[in-house]
Image (cartoon, rainbow, N blue to C red):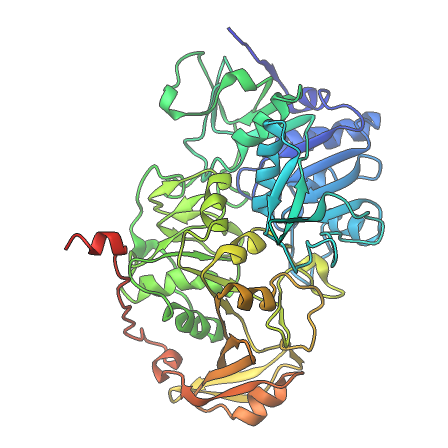
Length: 538
C-alpha cells in the first residue's frame, strides 16, 4: 500500500529543487497551502535554496494584501518567474504586496493569463498534450499581438501564440509541466487519500496533482487532519492517495484567510439568510439594483468581484433569494456569493464543483448572464479590468474575467461613470451631482483591453454598461446611452464626461425612481422560458 511521508512544512520544502516549476492550488484567501509556502520561504532564507523557481497559480495564492500566500516566495533569488491568473491586490493606500514590488521593479518575469485556461493547461500537461487551443483571450491583453499577458518589460513573449485553423483564429497556450504540485485539503488518511469536507472548494487540486504526478513530479498536500489509513469514504475522496507523496499536517489551518471555519460555506449546513448583513444604501447599491433588473427568474448567472457582487444580496433583500442560480469560478453553484475579501465562496451553495469543471461551463457559455466590474471603457466598447496605470498593484488581474466574457451570451458591466472624490446625492427619486469625480472611466482608448468590444459584436453578444447615472449599450454603430437617471443632465453629466462621442438612443428612457430610494424597490423578474424541447412536451 502506498504510504506518503508525513513531514513538517520546512521538511516538505526540501523536496523542491533549484530551478523547479511549482504549481499551487489556491484562490486568494481560499484553499491556500500557506504553511508549505511559508516553509519554502524559510528554507530559502536559511540556505538560499530552492532558487530560480517558476511558480504557477491558476487563481491567486494567499490573501489580498500579500501577507500570506505568494509573498512567502517573493524573495530575490528564490523566484525567477510567476504565471498567475490573478495576484494579491491590497488597498491603494497600502504598500504594494512584495510580489507586486518585484514585478514593478523588473526583478522577475511575470505573466497574467486567464484562470480557466491555466486549469486547462494543467490537464494538457497531465495527458502529455502540447497545450490548449482556445479562443479565450483573442483581441485582449493575452493575445501575443497585444501583450501576451506580460506584466513588465523583462518578461519575454512566451506561452501563447496565434494559430489559424479552419479559417478561424485561435490562441495556442503551451502546457506547463510542474515538477511539484502544492495542494490543500481538509483531511488526509495515512495512505494519502484526501477529502475536502471543510473546504469552500476543491479548486484545482486534482488536476494539479495529475500534472505533477504523471510527469514524474512530487505532490505535497497540506491538510488540517490526519486519519487512519482506509478510514475515509471512497465517495468523499477527491484526490486519491496514489498521487500524494508528502503530507503536511497544519491543525490551525484557516478555512479562508479571514475565516476560521464556517460550515455554511463548505456545504455542511444551511444558515438563515437573515444572518447576511444588509447592503447599505449607496451609489453602488443603485447600480447593483439596475443590473439585477436585467436578470430573469430561473437563469444561471455569474458575477465577478466588485460592485457586481452586490447583486445577489439585492435579490435577497427583494425577497428573490432563489430566483437565480449563481455560478462563480471557484466552484460554488447556487447559494449567495459573499462579498469583499471572502469573495469566491457562497453561503448555502447547492453544489461545489472543481474550478476546472466550473470553467468548462463558463467558457462554453452554459449560462445566461455575467455581471462584472470595470476600470475603463473605450470608444470600441473595450473594457479594462486588470491594469490601472501607475497603480497596478491595487488590481487583481484577469482572473476568470476573460474566460467568462468569451462565452457569456449577455454581459452587464457595472461601475461608476467617473473616478475620484465626488459629491453625489440620492434624493427625491433621483440623482443630484453636485461635484463630479475628476477622472472619467470612458476613455478614448483603454490602457490595456481585458474585453474586446469588436469581438463581442462579431459574436452577437449583448453588452450593457450600467453606471449610477446612465445605462449604455454596445451597438455596431457605437456606445449608445439608452437610459438616464432622474435629475441627471444628459449633456453636462454624461456626454461631456466621456472622452469620446457617445450616441444617444432616440427613445432614451429614464431609470426607475425606485432605484434611488432607500427602501426595497419591489423588484420582479420575468421567468426564463423552459428549454424548447421541454416546452414541446406540453
